Image (cartoon, rainbow over all chains, first blue to last red):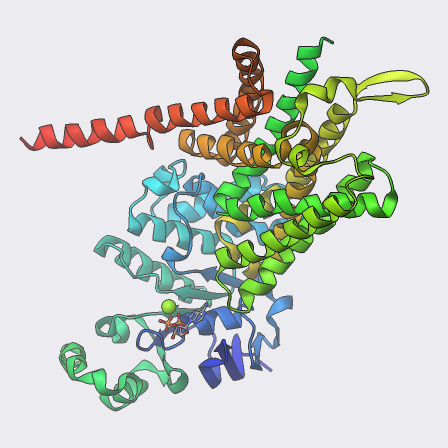
Length: 253
Length: 294
Ligand SMILES: Nc1ncnc2c1ncn2[C@@H]1O[C@H](COP(=O)(O)OP(=O)(O)O)[C@@H](O)[C@H]1O
Ligand SMILES: [Mg+2]
């Protein structure tokens, strides 16, 4: 039987007893680009963190290819929100990308030639090879995001979780990221991306998960990304949404 | 070795140990926690004495290690149950330290330590308090203790370098790939504790904090590489110790106070002159932007 790359069952997460995710259940198909869409504070980041075991869950379970995340770490790559780290940390781009190898290296060992080669290749893939030695605080927002993506590539994973990789990046970086995502997909990898720009959802993602504390809808984007579902997800805030969503309907063949 | 040389060696060992550990404290924004631990270990020292009836280094290190970890642990518990982290540190710091002071004054007759000594240290007496084994004088016992602690610190940092680095830079990613971030946190706090105790006799609690924070903060201004930052910080620790000793000789002032002042002076210089983060380079950059515009 073919296993699901991501299987979340009845997941509930609360911060200080305030529920943030309630009874979320879903299975993700293999080899798809999946967008996770919902308003600010909907629990999108929380969902990823709970799946990766970064925060305690109140109930529910998560399986990656049929097994607990703990035993499947090497299959999973993670791109946190760019703002979650201190970019003044004294280190350079290559060093950050090498951190993607740490999970494979194990205790008491240093990254070797092979790891450096993999990291350089990852930097090359995101068009950042010339910046390998650059101090990370000297990079633009888009370049920092590319470094984070390169780090995830260096993890050499099968399932990827990316938290708002398109936020605050230039158009060139956005293009680079999307072609990278498609390349990962072509290799049969599953990529789950938290995304906030409704206009590009249809263009970028095969599947969409609409989330607002609860799962609103999940499925192929053309079936799920409807005004009706969006209204449920965004509630009263849809007035301005109409104008945002309709153009992409127009261009849609 | 001469009297002065022993004092400079003692100060340098404090400077190197504290300087290296301090870099990680700066990067993890934990200067306050180190400040707390450097005081609460007093309780560990007193308890260790009351249990073992001896002032031997090993008991002091164990006592301080335990109380240092307890401090970090209590702060963590309070913080994760909703208390703001600086308030959590304040509460744990003052209660454990006060408890230590009470015990110390209650058993003052029996313990050779006094509060003043613990806070200010007495590096002047270090060279006379020597370690003798089998009738052979092996030099000041403080130097031995500091040397051993430095070696322990260096070994731990060497062994766990990449884990410490990633859990300082990106704890979420570190946790996701299976690195025990909490273990690394407590490991560092243990290193802070034993370093503080070893440095107590010579420079005292207050100046340990200066040595923990100032060299690291200075090195942070001067480099973009973690390894280089550790080296610069250690060198600044040594320079402060040696410079502080000579300054104390010339002006006839407290040696440990003078060592901390030199460290402060080096920081001020770096703060003004640092090529990238310094005041001067920022001023110049601003000037050149303005003149470009006009
Ligand atoms: N560490 C935290 N402690 C308490 N509440 C939190 C924490 N992180 C997030 N929250 C709250 O949980 C909710 C969901 O947050 P998040 O998952 O970051 O939303 P999203 O990524 O969809 O914008 C928000 O209301 C936020 O305020
Ligand atoms: Mg978020």
